[in-house]
Image (cartoon, rainbow, N blue to C red; front, side, top):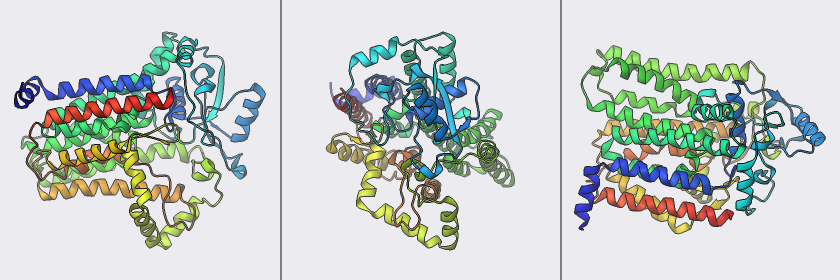
Length: 490
């Protein structure tokens, strides 16, 4: 059969159906190949999911000293953070208290430990066979995830609650929670491809990024964030193609989207700027159009600040910094904030140094495509990174979206504002005073912005056999990711 005939059959059947089937196949495969809790922040994320499923919407507060005393008395290993700052051992931070069976010691690693341990099938069998025993519990610090709002984990929370109600074993609960996130993300990706059929292959290839696949099937906040941001970008771009007035459902959808972006990660609220690509006549007058746009932006900001006020301002919690994470005592958020206000050029210089530094830029690229393991210290084959990134660029340049220059500028501007927020937050919380480069930013933070950035690059005619090429690249990505994870950990 000729390539042209295969491409025609794929298109007639519905390329998005094949794309999403492959995404789910490799997502499920990687979910079970990856040993439990071998992702950054996965342990503390699962603990946050569990406490929300028990009705604890605000994380309780505790100190490292209190946690350590309890663990020592019970001869237990902490599943959460360790506050590495001796001077801050009594600072109040978010904590969680969950069943011991959900966090077996053999799957728990600290940042100071070697995370290259090999696992066996017996470990997984024992985890699956472990009864929940909800009354046998242990506590841990979760300062990096305790700040997130309950809606940010709703697929995982609902599944954890149902699984506990059914009295399932600990291992079954863990995997069902991860799979619920995967299926939620898959639904978002499928809808994204339906809203933007011109960019279907590009959306599929972004979803098949190893980092996306690994995070999608997990209890981390990244799963919902990725799905919501992809769906928001695609839907907002699709709204620009009509001149009919927005329906009540669409208006409600924009309001709901504004709140969900605030609940996921507020820094991605800039995606809402794509609203201004919609023809004003769809809302009514230009005045109504601008007022409604300002309203959804304000709602997004208000929802973010309201939760921050409730979870941080009213509790007096100490938010995590690299002072706590690594024990660096020259981290001072208040002093850094004053420094930025007095010397803004120093912040911009540090940001530029970070971007042009070859090792830093390479780390972002590798993290964007895929690094795995507790400390993101395991890599895929180098040749894969090169080839997959080039494939993404080709599909970005030829994604068949017909955009005005102003629309492209808006998309790049929205992504740039979010990136600016990344750098500023990490300059304040994770970068030592006087440092010339920023610390703490990871390449996976840019994945939710990828649809805006890559779609804005479309300048060439569509590739021939685009669906077939995308399928081949996606299958290679999923297979290489699964095999690399298997041979790394087993």
